[in-house]
Image 1 (cartoon, rainbow, N blue to C red):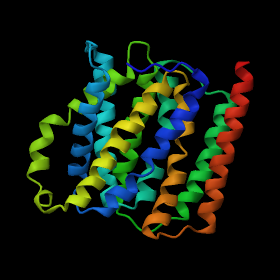
Image 2 (tube, rainbow, N blue to C red; image 1 turned 90 degrees about the vertical axis):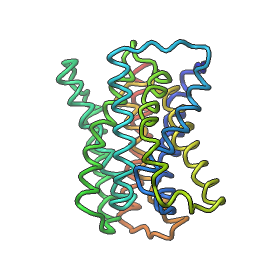
Image 3 (cartoon, one colour; image 1 turned 90 degrees about the horizontal axis):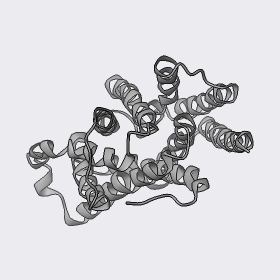
Length: 281
């Protein structure tokens, strides 16, 4: 089992997880597979990867772990579906409205109000994300955008529940990805699968390993040493990077408004990290 020896690396690992997640749009838009098939492939491969990582460790199933695993499973599935139904930028940005849910969960379940720094950071991030979103309005269906918003609630649940001492992130990922195993028949019945070229299979396997196992491994190592809201703020760099990948590899253009939004998000995250580090010392 991996352990993070240097806790100051936690924010960097969370950033790496966002970096890997941000590549989802490239993969989903570059293949003819359905969103459900992509979700199942990623989940099944991630299951065996995390099972290997946690080998020799007996996984104890608890209600909180199952709830966290269910949030992970639903979030991942809905996000893949949304990526097929709307633009990659829309899906990523709308899913990253999750800080509002984290604040709501904290207020209702923990009776915790956000600090002034968290409230200001949240407002600035949403300004940057909104500008990035408005600048990338390339269409996208109402259904896809709605699914992305629903996914945000479950995405927030993963962050919120993973902070509980009774929830081990690696064990949660094993359980969450195990939920994809009963869906393997859906993957095998997809008519596109048999005609997928070998080169595209390499592309898909890389997507599953990086976005499914690599990104969530970074997340599991970093989340225990950062607050749920702080971790979510850091990973909100994902909607900034996602349009950059589609610009570089798929030729989607970035508007001046999007660039301003990206700059606001990056600047806000840097200021928040510096200020929160000073408060802890």
